[in-house]
Length: 173
Image (cartoon, rainbow, N blue to C red; front, side, top):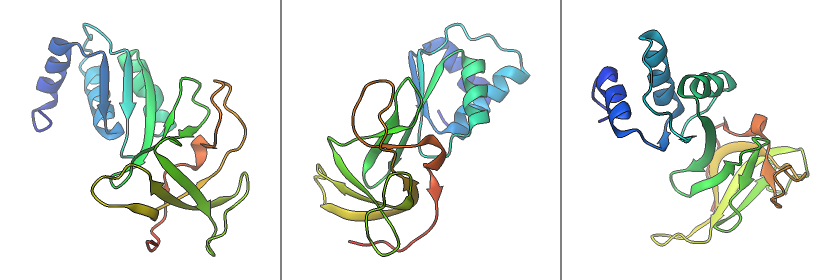
């Protein structure tokens, strides 16, 4: 349980031996700090660790990967839209989830920006069952990356260095 002391949470990880951990980077980083500080050996490392909902810094990523002996994959999303983009195992940026969403990067006048230019993130969700989400401005700024990832997947990406640049702006519909 999230409110349990760190010692109990780490004991639970050693008991459950999960293949996958999904959580906030700050929470997983707290676990990693506790494990390192108390020289705890994990009985089994998870295969994959997914982080979401917060900024994952390079230092946090490396520390978590080293401590858990696992690969970390970051997910970029919003509560209203779900997953917007995700990292593949090449970690060259975030692949846009083009099957579920249409993501636009626009300048302050609403014009689509070109490759490498920064703008506001606008999202249309194709599968929102509760309420249509059309041209929703989530308040982040990002850059389109048109070059293909070396993993071979096609489609637009957000470069790693330009995701999660949160700058409050008004929402548009």
